[in-house]
Length: 173
Image 1: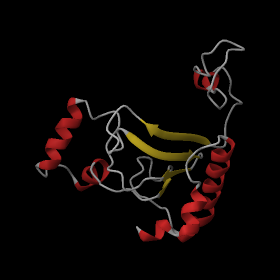
Image 2 (image 1 turned 60 degrees about the vertical axis):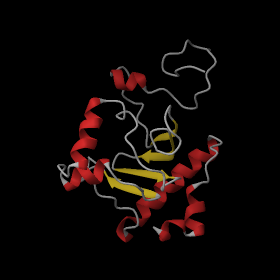
Image 3 (image 1 turned 180 degrees about the vertical axis):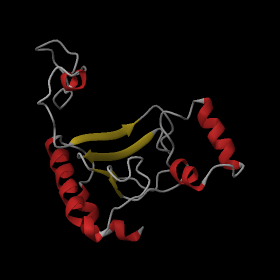
């Protein structure tokens, strides 16, 4: 495999998707996507925390960001920060109760909801989870449907989000 954005024409790659590097570089302006998909899986860390193993998927539209946490009880740890001095400083400040409530909630929580929905226009830092709000039900369903469609196309090994909905798992939170 290789990087789809930098591979030579005709080179084999195991990446599923289309490059938008020309859009980022400003070379191509008509390459806008309705959705951007992302996933997290294994990282080089312990399997008991999210810095080592995190099964989550997300879909982002221009206005909204939906996250599907397939193992919500996995202890959440900031993946790319655990070896940095800044992370150790945050851990120490948290232990000394020196962080604001917002920062405690943002960095140190043990369990995540199965679904997270954020309004990127009104909450660009994704601090208020709107999943399950009746007035956003259509938005949430559309994003879940798009995520599920993408997971099927990619032969994703995770249970699709509709499985969590049908079994009522999210209601037990």
